[in-house]
Length: 393
Image (cartoon, rainbow, N blue to C red; front, side, top):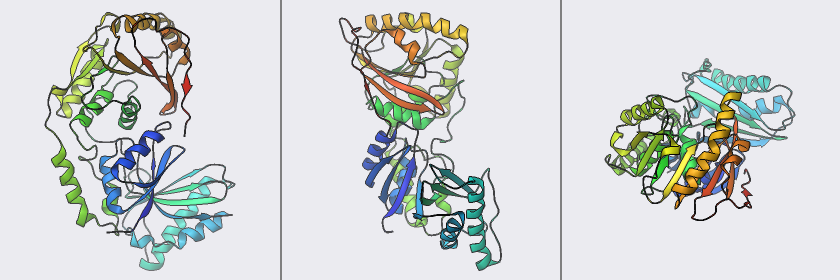
């Protein structure tokens, strides 16, 4: 088996802590949270399993070089020293992704060009040919990260982002990515078997993720990965067994304590289509209902929803009237539940007039959000709270 390697998994900002816990549970060593991701050590077999099993990571990067730099020429020289032809062939198409934080370089485009030149010069010297560039569907993605004086070069072992799992049939107006939905479930401390209600289910991403977790379905079973093309990875030796073990763990579909509700019939239809496409129709109970007229589906559980928010002035006025009514319904009818609301509008959510015990900063794409935790207890739930704000790692 291969020796220990260094890897980095990017993730949506705010999910670094739960991703670190997930990677540790999968067997990663020396796990360290960074801004928008988690670094760790492990072998190639572990990396295959993480690509297959991680629900929160956006992708998995394999670090192939790191060090100091003082110019674009230094970066070219460091890249030119690497054994690219031991990792992939000249026939593989190539894309270079460059990110920087406080880097002194003047042009990231020029740095990207120099890394591309270094790789192409490596192949030309050995084969007389150079790999082609494909910015849309490359066979190999090289990632360069720069800070003030350090560089890191990595190979993307995932290919398409890990939240692209291949089972979606439809999408709502503002769908959550699957890894953000998984992160929300982790932050809500939901576990399979705990009753779960999404009262504004949209296209059903949160519920579908919960169903797949309940049935122990590995998220990457129905897709391919970039590491399958890497020459020095023991893919033939280990990958079929890893896939087979994951497939054998999956449970057959069955009714689950999962409920999806929405006022909009077209949203529920999108949820139904998504569950149908995944072969999980019997796992969820869907109902078109106004939340203000609803009753809880069980005596206790977790209510986890992406709250509606208004873009236009008229929508904001409607929601300003709706939120206090929602707060009344939750307080009067949902005692014993814990509500978690993802929202991008903290001013509106103040009108819920319920005690928020935790606000976790998150990003839904570029949208700055908070996940609010609201225990729904008997008696008064409207005393001014002392709120803790989770730090973004």
